Length: 448
Ligand code: HSE
Image (cartoon, rainbow, N blue to C red):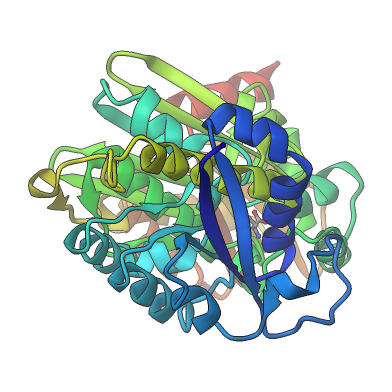
């Protein structure tokens, strides 16, 4: 008879329903590939009456988490309720009772990952989290296994489907931010609190987790720089297009000696860059390793079935270990405990990047030279300038692209410029990825 691994699922929301559905619908293929049966024994949720795309048998359902945690037969607990508490308490309780854990809880892992991983190591169990980053894309597995031979130089990309969907709709159809967000919520890929998506926090959770894996380290989530897309004005999308660029919410992480860069912010990338072509709810992540070079992974980064597929892959992974009589084949960060270091996140002020500025200034002789003078005093060199329209009264947008400049100088220069009486609104800044190449490209596209 085929051996079975018993599974308890906490949380029957969007992703939980996807996991249950894939376990029911693809039971046969899962059993063939695992060499044993994954038996979903108990599902716990506070609301059992909500209409759902799956209809598990009533006796499988419960509102009491103890029905899973206290069941000695259940070897793997899947936590899909999200958020900090009670998810953290449930996971720690499962670990302390010797159960393996599968979670897609990026917020919890980004903030409390080290605590959970230590607890798991102390109890000889594993935590798997493929569904936490990149939805259905096997990104965690790529870093843990496929790229294990590499020193990773950088990982960056589009890690929030909702923000990418909104920016795509704003760019392609001129949809308002609010309408595009509503559509994303209707499709079910936005977070329960969509501020996590549009303010960049969700992408920051994900890049913090990827950084820990890529550089074998602990990351203090408080040090991650986060800026969302709520201030992106359609006019900036248009100016970016005029320069040959798209605006994307990028999550960026780089290894820099003992320190790392970890940041999330709207970024201008050239329209020919592969990431510029990633649209809608799709995610794409570029990873650069010293042996493999650059690779890119692309796919659906959110949604019921893609994330359900990722969670189920973890169940198979842990199930295979159990069937082989192995409790922990590989620690969660795929790095021995003694090799894990704490890395400082490089302060934003020290970064050297190229920038897009949109000034709102009165249209009068001498204004541009005042702005340019302050930039020059702060060592910021201008690569291109455009001003559209002419207004005797009121203000006009003056748009500039810079050569490489230090972020601290930029911050100080803009603070000074925004105090000028001729400047009528705070200057908008968007960072440009690809450094000098971008600035050169802009000069060329403007002179063509
Ligand atoms: N809200 C997330 C997104 C879901 O839009 O990408 C997947 O983590």
